[in-house]
Amino acid sequence: MSVIDISTGKIIQTLPIGAGVDAVVYDADDKLVIVSNGDGTASIFKQDTPDSYSLVQTLATQFRAKTMAMDMSTHKLYFPVVDFQTGTRTAVPDSFKLLVYKMQ
Image (cartoon, rainbow, N blue to C red; front, side, top):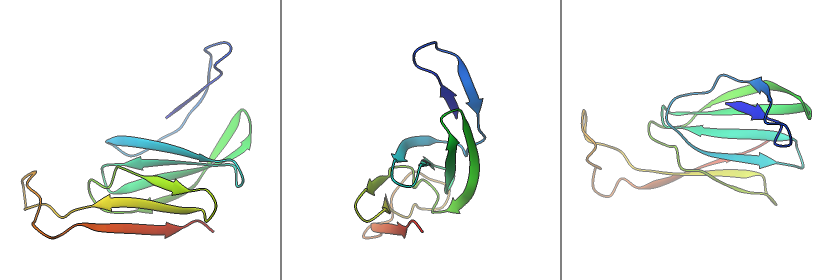
């Protein structure tokens, strides 16, 4: 993930994240950036200053749990997921679930 100064286009910092990124949210209250990755992780970074970010946690989610939403009032992360048939992109019937994580 690259943090860019939008006024200059300059790259401020580049941070390692998982593969298959789909969503990024910013929790302004806690100054956290959360990146959902299709590889079964979510990368969580703390904004130390406007130009400095540090890794807080690599959260284990579920393979292909890359779609994400955050409720800013409760600080909960939501990942809708399904199980897939081994070696395919075919969803297992009736396997939908919603993974919910509470930010501490």
